[in-house]
Image (cartoon, rainbow, N blue to C red; front, side):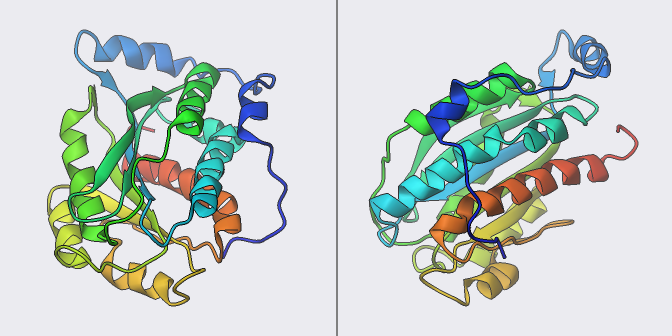
Length: 249
């Protein structure tokens, strides 16, 4: 469970703040050269699914958004990205509610350095809420995320859908059916349940949502805890991509 009480820097303050320390590994230039003239290679494709269902008030939605922005501000996240053989990941974010109600926040973006991680955080911080209800379709969120991988301009890396939400699936096909299809197509699903509305949601995610080698759940007790939980989750997901490809690390 995420611990309460951690002070976070505001999103806009971080975007305008000074640089994070650390030099890019020399291996990145070589990796880019090997990838040319084809698509840019990355260590991980990560699709971030953000709950915008009716149970998520505007305040709760803002807490989620701030949590993501502050998480990408954390120097440990960029350090983890830089530790991979390609020293880069591809990230996309979208909002979700009902079975056919999903809205993009950002298309696929490569994150490889301070400039790109700040640009992604700024895009998330400024993106408006596009959905406000329509049920809670975890299966729809998984299906939409799975389709996104075919739209990436990058190649390589582990494919992960990261589903955050405050409720169990109540619209569309069963969540486990969508999960099983995603796994069969080489995609992992990790979960970040927010337990404020449904205290047993962590167990639901464990049994019905997550799947694939090394899949995991990190729960947030409240929306205020979300930022702490997402930092841990991002680092584990990035590290998981390296473990899945030990020969390349």
